[in-house]
Image (cartoon, rainbow, N blue to C red):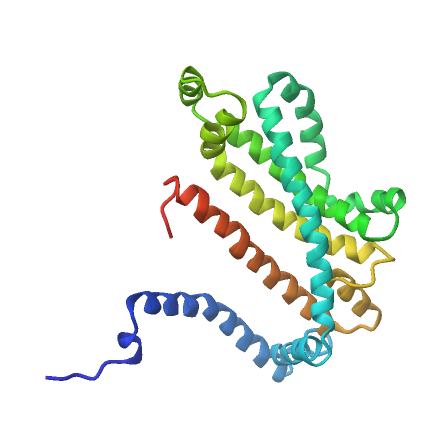
Length: 274
């Protein structure tokens, strides 16, 4: 007897699982967006203070497709982020490794690190504006500082948590220096290091937006777009900037950090594959 199957049942298992995941991911946004739209349309919320999602999406289309300025703002922000975060990642991993492996250096710099890590990055921007000027260097410095401390701190903690017996066994077998780091310390600390990289890129992204808002000579950037919309009281453009920040941050985490997780800690069997 031939029975009719639904479209979902005809799909391969992998596609079906992916479809369910997409629906689960989008459903909360759809529910919130629908409630938001109805609240604005019914007059419970004034559109001048909180524009409807349909209005925001129309503005996204206008700025990205018809005018193209959204892409120019975004590409400029991503350039600053890539330079600052690359510097933070390289120096944070190196500095964190040195402090973790050298007790004297760790005792010297730990108080300074603990002191500076509690200072918000945005508080440094006025200092950078005076010392570095009003251009890209200030924003890149803010991005660097936003990611540096998180990466350094988690690298130190990750290496400190590596089983001492493994280090001794590796040294007994002749592992020293870079070989010891690559074969024992890096795999053993990778979970904490990846966490630091994830936190670092989030902090760097937020520092980037704040730096672009405060730097007068910066003409392009998502933060600058939001700041300029304030003068025209254009709340819709502000929400376009907020959505762009959120979506871009999510994609950076999924495309960069998530890929790094798959090729390191999941391949090494340190966490269950998802």
